[in-house]
Length: 319
Ligand SMILES: NC(=O)c1ccc[n+]([C@@H]2O[C@H](COP(=O)([O-])OP(=O)(O)OC[C@H]3O[C@@H](n4cnc5c(N)ncnc54)[C@H](O)[C@@H]3O)[C@@H](O)[C@H]2O)c1
Image (cartoon, rainbow, N blue to C red; front, side, top):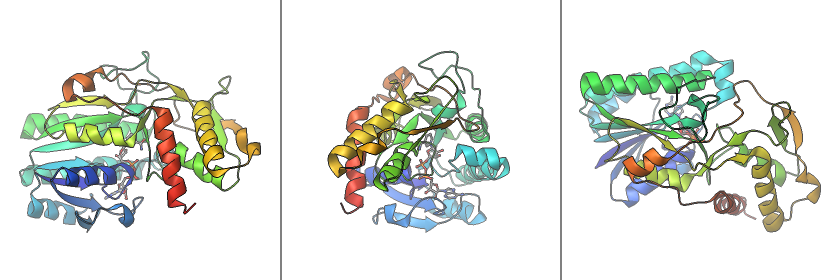
């Protein structure tokens, strides 16, 4: 099948491109390299340096006529969306509309859309949170993701354009850099390797930090394989259902780096700091729907995933 991956030069999208190619699909990548890197793009894919908001992109869709569009391109920073909601909406809402209009015109059969289960439910009343929980987005980034999901329903209903939405929790793994929604693993690794103390942001009275559900990128990739021909017109949480505090995550990264790179024991205590605008206290997602609807289940524990990520970071550091 011919698959066009937007954001295919980014952290998660580039792993998906690799996997689709390995499965024998023809892959076209569109990315403006605003946060991704050309070095991540598999040389067996056809790469177009392009903005998903542009007219060029609509033209490209009509030329390429892919069977499926996998949409990973986005403005991904929650703090940036709080500072500049217009820019966030421009990329994340108008970019999606440009894609959907082009998809209808060029006979695309399905869009795989990437939403954020870590952000759209806000402070949920139920943990782990399932897909039927009310959407309570608390940042412009999360609002844009929630609205995008509504647009997808509209295009399916009105134009017959099929979709599957994957609501990721906090994704981590090789190729992640420190600017993202869940760049915390990369931020900790960077700072510790530079011999600088880490910050642990937390709400008052919760010194262990925020609670998150961290999912390894290799597992996320398999959900994108399943979504090629399953999960029609549905949204699925892609997560682990396991809660990890920022402190537990920090300790895991620290211990691995101490063992593998001999970093200073004096860096073992992170510096506390206040939660940032748009932060939520707790996020943990139920994944039964993805088990049933996509036949997907995560295979990597956080201990194993952090180990692999630290090993990748040290290898790419030339250590
Ligand atoms: N990382 C996470 O934990 C997480 C969690 C939930 C959802 N997501 C979603 O997953 C997707 C991928 O995120 P990521 O973590 O790999 O981030 P990333 O920044 O590595 O990837 C995004 C890619 O999109 C490209 N891009 C941005 N704006 C573009 C535009 N206007 N036109 C073309 N390309 C553009 C960037 O250059 C980059 O390569 C995003 O939609 C993000 O919202 C990520």
